Length: 219
Image 1: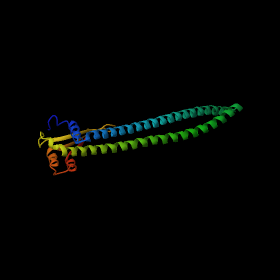
Image 2: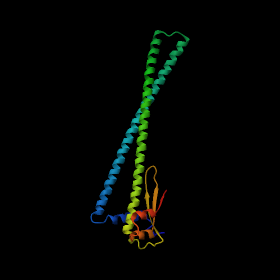
Image 3: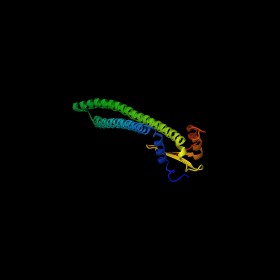
Image 4: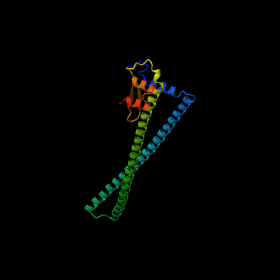
């Protein structure tokens, strides 16, 4: 086990990365790049959220319109049944015949409108699901890229500054934890052997090889 300070991989990662960017102008540039990436990510997330909200509102409006048409159709069908029942027990007068004709026409119109609305609603619902699936795929891809980038950067940092871990025994380890957020949030860990870090510091292996030697877990 590492010392109490070394058990906190998040702190180690932050300190080591700051050192890496501490070359002339590097720290400020690094912070600027991080701020820009964060701002761009937040803007993209906000734009997607607004688009999703707009599509949900449209779907809600279509659902309400569909419900209204279906209710009107049921009302017309009920009126039709009443007149048709009267027709079975006796002859309809001129006014009833006129009402029945108007109801038949209204019924046909409503049936057509309901059918069109159902198609429109189904199409919009499919589009919402498609957009949601696309965004989920993009989010998963970005998360995979983030995980790969963090692991690569941390391995490089260990190779560059691993010599500063003098207090860590060769039998101990350095670990890094990355917590992701979202619907499928998880904790990701990289565990590096101190002996492997020493090999990278001495140039016997490179950062890529060090990363491959690390144990990788996700929960």
